[in-house]
Image (tube, rainbow, N blue to C red; front, side):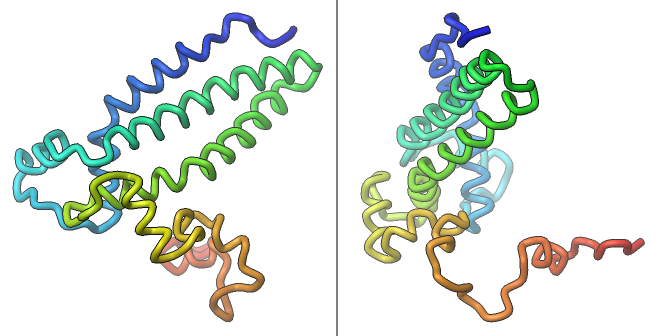
Length: 183
């Protein structure tokens, strides 16, 4: 069982592009809501106008980032799975390894695009485009700023930033998750 010859990257790109286009308003709503940006929508109709209407700052960069990322993950996982199965690996290995490797690569590579496009979704943003947003982030925070909040930038730190850092699960428990064994 070798790599399937019927894997057409254009099909993956097309499907991913359509999914990105359809889901852009949902992504924009999440970007605005989760980032704490002030939205001018006082009613459902006003909020819908903000999500579906102009200005369309960063839409091309967002759609590009969403499209290549989805296509790379789906195509890469399918081809990787076929290749590993063809080499005699188990279904578990053939399913997990490409998914983990490719999605991790895509997340790290795409993060500056995500960071910049979220920045320009701020209704108060003065950045004209993704390039301007990325340049400003770089000027203010350096290269690490492009991966701010992902866990990639802190990996390069020689020691924890704060003494007595808690592990992520401990921080989650502190935010209202029940302690183990609590009823």
